[in-house]
Every structure is written in C-alpha cells, then in structure tokens.
Length: 373
Image 1 (cartoon, rainbow, N blue to C red):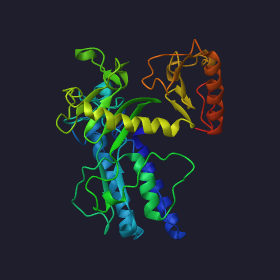
Image 2 (image 1 turned 45 degrees about the vertical axis):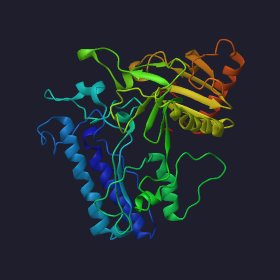
Image 3 (image 1 turned 30 degrees about the vertical axis):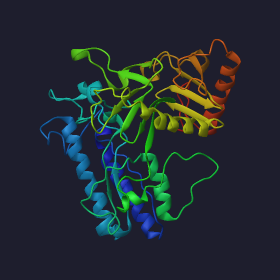
Image 4 (image 1 turned 60 degrees about the horizontal axis):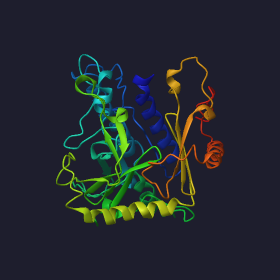
C-alpha cells in the first residue's frame, strides 16, 4: 500500500479539483506525498529507475507526480492563472538516524547541505527547508527570496489572498507574508521563529542569530552515531548557546559571548510568546509523548514503552506514566521538576489533558480502537 499510495492520492486530488470546478467553487487542496520520508518505498514503475536505491527512486516518483497536478490545473480545469501552488516540506532529511532503511547498500537519507542537524532536532539543518511557489501573473518567475518564512505563515497569507479575516480571540503565530510572494519585500515581516520539541521551547532564531536553551547533540560514535530523534539533550547551565548562521551555517562557533547584545532582542521574543500563552491552554500529543500547558504551568509525560513496540501486550494507562511538572513562567528551560512537590497541580493538569483530548477527539494510545484518527 505504501509504495502505491501517492498514485491514489494524486488521482483523488485531481477528482476533488474537478468536482469543485464543476460546482463553481474555489478550492484548497493539501496533498502530502509520502516521498522523501522513511521508509521510501517506490512503486513498481519507479523501482530501480534512479540507480541509487529507494531514496532516489522515490524522489523521481515524487517529481513525476507533480506533473499530473499541473496538467490538471492547466489543461483540464483551466484555472492555472488563478491558482497559487506551493511545494514545500515540514523538515529537512531524516539523515543518519534512519540510513539503514535503504536498499542495495544505499542509505535512505538526504543531505542538509551546509547546515547542521536533521529531522528530530531544531537546528537549521533540521527545520530550514526549501519552498517553491507558483502563481502566474503574481509571483515573478525565476526569483528567489532569503526571507524567513514559517509554514505557520501560510494561514494568514492565504487568508489575505482570499479576503478572509483571522480570528482575534486567540494568539496567531503566523504572519501575513503576501509582500514576499509579490516581491514587494525582500526580507518579509518575520524577524523571529521559536523552535519546540513537543511542548518544550528549546531554541529561538532572531534575524541571523540562533540561540539554544537546550543542548542537543548526537549520541554514540562511528557506526553507532545517532542524531535526529535519537539525540541526547540537556538544559543549558543558565546561559544559551548562540550562533550567527549567516557567518556560520553549520553552527560550529558559539559567539554569544562577544555578541551578548543579541540576547536582549532574542529573549524579548521568548518573553512576548510566554506572555501571549500565559492564560491559554495548549494540548500536545505526538508519538505517544503527551503534554498540557495551562496558565503558566506545563505537565508532560513519555510512555514507558512506545505503543508500536508492545505488540499484543496491554497498553499502560495514562496514570501509569511518569509525569513531570514545570512552572514555565519562572522556569522556561524546565530545569526544576515540581511533580513530587506539587501533586495537586499535576493532577489538575492531568485532568485537563484528558478533557482537551476528548474535546479535539484525539485518539488515545490507551485504546486499540481509533475511529477519530
């Protein structure tokens, strides 16, 4: 199924666009290809085509699948001139952590180029991706932009394009970047970007500077070197590490000492974010790691065994997990676990977690039945 799913996704996408056009309705289509993400399993039409293994075969297949989408917009629907097409990714390559998923002695991995890191980290090499945008008559062909543009910016940018209004009853993390698309601004309207692992704020980028509140580095050496999601992490000892990623894209030289002035504007971004969510509730769940933020407090947990490794064994209940508790308002680096000393607050957040999970119809890992997922 995995090897052929992109064919099915393209066919269903084109059918959706046809039905919208026939009904005289505009459309928003989100089409997530499987290519590039481990395990890369090419379909029979592309197996062996690249001569560099599954990864190369799947990239060729992904490139091919863009063609029918463009052909449908141009030739079948005639809406090419009135359609903004975005080709983007949410992360850079999975890299060394999953290299053994390849075949014929080829690694199942891409390259982060001059940048450090890969999927599972928060370095430039993990989250800095390319994006291609096509909008005939609006976006000038053969142009590039160095503007900082987050995937969160698509929502307010698209809302601007269609004349929509953004909600005013909650913080919005994205910014309107229409001026970047139209070539009216070289650097856009985003100066900063916060980076999280789960619900943990671990880094901030301000202009060309990147600061880390958590030290993240690969484990092991040689053939056992494991970066990305298998990296080790530890809170910094009071001061963040800082890099100038324009001068040093691989982030080899810590320069926060001679450029300590960068701390003030960068940390101001963090303070503004914390103030914006102080009275908000935020629920997290990813790969069975869970967290809940509420009113300056954050509770989080990781399962004793990942659910996908349990086989037929009984899944543990959520209260059997080891929970941690942090007062983010005073300890945003999460150095001081207060779970043991403040059990009432922990129980309050655990109950809120279950309420939020039910509210958003999230599939709980404590059940084999996942209709909502």
